[in-house]
Image (cartoon, rainbow, N blue to C red; front, top):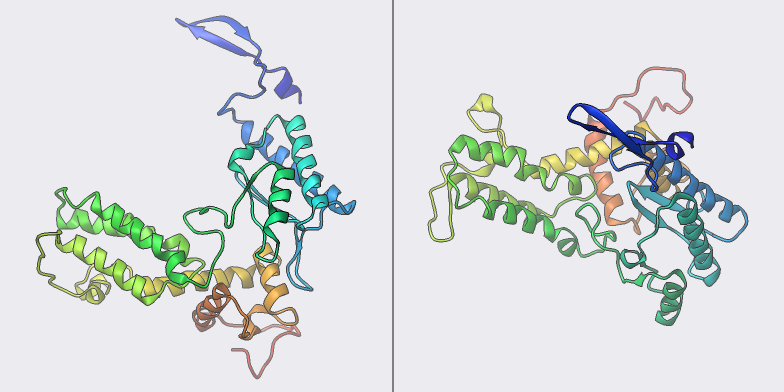
Length: 332
C-alpha cells in the first residue's frame, strides 16, 4: 500500500517544479494504478462473500442439482448478489457491504441499488427485507446493456426497444443530406450494429426483423413522412454479395443464427465457463452440449441456442483421436 499512502503530486508552472502536495483521497482519477486497485478491492469483496457462505450466513443460488453455486456477479462497477429471501441473508449482505466500504473507501449508493425477489415471496416480506438492506424494492431490475434483466415470455416487450432505437437513430438523420455511399456506410457501421448484442442471446421475431429491414430500406432510398421514393431493389437483393452487383447488407435473420452459433461454439470450446456450467446443470447434466436434447420446460434462450447449434454442427467436425467420447456411428 506504500504506492497509495506515500503518493505526492508536483506542479509544473512555466517549466519549473513548484512545490508538492499529498492527496487525502488515495489515487487520483485516471491514475494507471486505479484499475488494478479496483480489481484488488473487487477480489476482497468476493472473499468476504465466500467467508459468509462458509459460515452459513449466505446461501446463494444453486443452478440445478449438478450446476454451480452462484453467489454474486461483478461487471465493471455493477454487482449482483444472490441469496435466500430471509432476514439472515439480508443482514449478512448489509454487513459485508459495510465492511467493504470501510476497508476500500467505496461507498455503496443505496438510492441506486434495488432488491428483486421471486413472485412467491409475499409483499410484506419483500418490504421488510428491502428495509433491512436499505435499498429500493422493484419488481424487475432496470435494463442492463440495453436489455431487460428478466427474459419474459413476451418477446415483443423484451425486444421492442431495439426497433425504437433503430428508428430514433434514423430519425435524427433523415433531414440531413447524404449521398448514397454515405447512407451505405451509416447503415453498415452504425445502424446494423444496434441489435448485435441482443442477437447474441435471443432470436429476434420475424416481424421485428421485417420492421427493422423496412427502416433500413426507407433510409437508403430517401423516404420521408411526406415523400415516398421508388425502391429500385428489394432488401433481400441488396443483402447479396458485391460480386453479384449488390451492396452486401446484413440479413438480420441469418446474422442472428450466426451469433447464436458463436455462443454455442464458446460453450463447446470452454465447457468450464460459468455460462456453460449453468446451462449444463439446468439442461444437460448427464451429457455434453452437442448431445443435449430439447426439453418441454426449456426457456426461450435455451430453445434459441439449440437453433444456433444447428448451424454450429454444420461447420463442426470431430478430429480423429483416441478419446473415448467419440462415437463412430453418430459423430462426423
